[in-house]
Amino acid sequence: MGVTIDKIKEFEEKRADLLTMGGERSVQKQHDRGKLTARERIDLLFDTNTFHEAQLFVEHRSTLFGLDQKEIKADGVVTGFGKVNGRTVFVASQDFTSSGGSLGEMHAKKIWKVMDMAMDARKPFVALNDSGGARIQEGVPSLEGYGGIFYRNTVGSGYIPQITVIMGPTAGGAVYSPALTDFVFMVEETSHMYITGPHVTKAAIGEQVTHEELGGAMAHAKKSGVCHVVAENDEGCLNKVRELLSYLPDSCHSPVPVMECTESPDGECPELDDIIPDRATRSYDMKKIIMAIADNNEMFESHELWAKSIIVAFIRVRGQTVGVVANNPKFTAGVLDYKASDKAARFIRFCDAFNIPILTFADVPGYMPGKEQEWAGIITHGAKILHAYAEATVPKITVVTRKDYGGSYIAMCSKSLGADYIMAWPTAEIAVLGAEGACNILYRREIAGADDPAAKRAELIGAYEKQFNSPYFAANLAIIDEVIAPRETRKRIVALLEAFKDKVETRPPKKKHNNMPL
Ligand code: HXC
Image (cartoon, rainbow, N blue to C red; front, top):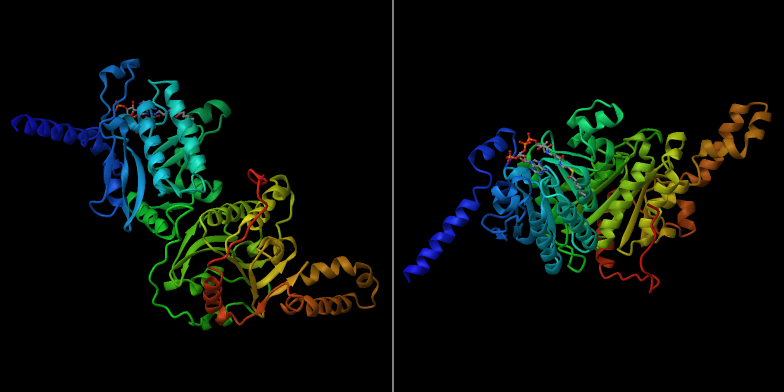
């Protein structure tokens, strides 16, 4: 009995020691920088007292460059699982206070294990990254460690939701695990991501740049689009991760979560009846329409600060998660440029992989013209959105609020790309081109040769508008299924989601996978 008690006491002491991470000074340094520790972050991510740690006693086994003398508690990463909003989630949280959270062989193996567990258990995986990168003393096993994480990110893609939260430095090839996951969160000022940091950038190409400018949260949220969600601090960031998880299913084989909803299915949104401005060139904020449709006027927006001419967001309709893709006329008239195409395509593919119905709102003047766009590959990028919609077999509902022109009409989940049901507001204009552009091409000679070119032009534009600046031509041809009053939109969507909840759509069998234009 005494021996057992002693052994338990020894175990408890060992465990308590390991839980101290890099020690008081390192923890203080972490706090002084406005960062929480790996364990504090876990406490905030999970529901109280639900976290179970795995492999706490793992140690590195390298003897190189003084590592034989160095203890790195839990080898610099805390792994395990717990509950988020009552549902199981797996986590790897790098501990910067222990050798800078650097990733060596055993550190990586802990992450592999928890990722394997998440995949076997079919539950989401969240990585909280705060690391100096590959453990320099260990050498190539560290690189193999990263490779194994990338491999698992890829195998798990579309199988379980994967989220990375950047909460410190992430440099070099280490940035590729986040890029392989579904959503990347960053914290303002304390998190950075780059392939090569400012020093190497200066040495290699002479460019002088700060950490923040090169790879801070705003750089990736506004310019590169690598970051999907930005938060002011660690706590706010982890709250946002919890919020996102509440919309997502556990895996591609799990039901999409349904929350309790007290709102009536027949509720009308009268405020939508006068949201479209009288003049076609005036903008409005599509977010107001999305909010009006959403339960409790709540939405979780991804990529809010990047490619703002398109919105991608999760909402709930009668408690059920729905992915929304919507042009936003408030920014560059809601045009589809190469970034907007990438943003939408990736989101559509995520929704399809996880059985989340897609609701599309179209108000789009076209694909963006110009040298910059062509040279950036708008053809390939624009094709992604077509591919993503055509590939998606989840329920797809489209609402055309105003302009829906040309190639971008097709791209915004037209019938030809497999929309299950398309509704248009009376303000919809479904055409190959805007009336003015169309008449300039069709009637250039007639207009130039007319006695009064301006009057002739106006007359021809009027005729074109009469034909196409309404939803009725498309409705007559059953290219759209219904014309509805804006105020009826939510109740129609509620009914359609209910009607299509058991939708099964098949694709040709015996194919390995699509070859999406990347
Ligand atoms: C081993 C590391 C480490 C690393 C930090 N540490 N990074 N140990 N390997 N990569 C250790 C430090 O030695 C120190 O240990 C502790 O972590 C804290 O580091 P500090 O430098 O004191 O912290 P700070 O001043 O905040 O600087 C943080 C830092 C800096 C900017 C991240 O540590 C740094 O530049 N580290 C190296 C970054 C790097 O070049 N990594 C390799 C990238 S290449 P003690 O014992 O003093 O507490 C790479 C390839 C991946 O990652 C490829 C994947 C395919």
